[in-house]
Image (tube, one colour):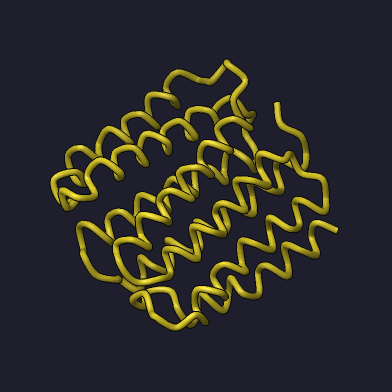
Length: 206
């Protein structure tokens, strides 16, 4: 049953990738609804298939974040960050067992997050500085918590999610304009990562 929902979700995901990724946020609802459907169908599939409820919550919050980020304006961007931040918390709670490792992997996640103080923080507008730092902290929590899980789809999905967020931050605050190839990579990594997290969670979390 889950594979049916993943395949169904892949349709709006591919439509969004080919038609809307890399385009500035629009006032029209169409692109936002297509983008939202791609993740909402994953959440629905997880709910029907009996995925861990925290993973379903993370996917549902991701769908809300997708809708917000597809809308124009800083208020929509902040709403999207809140939704995704709560989604990261849900994922972190689902993944955490108290035993992350290996140490070098934890160090790598923290180094990636810490590097944003050099290349990202100076370019973030003052009004967004605190929300962005809080969001980065939540990403770090999710990344470290995911290291409690064995190598497999969940860990790969989280790695793709982190890569997607890193590229998105570069595009928005460093490039300051959509870059088509980067936007394609952001969406492919993000949606693929979410699908892998769901698929892996169905096999059981540690």
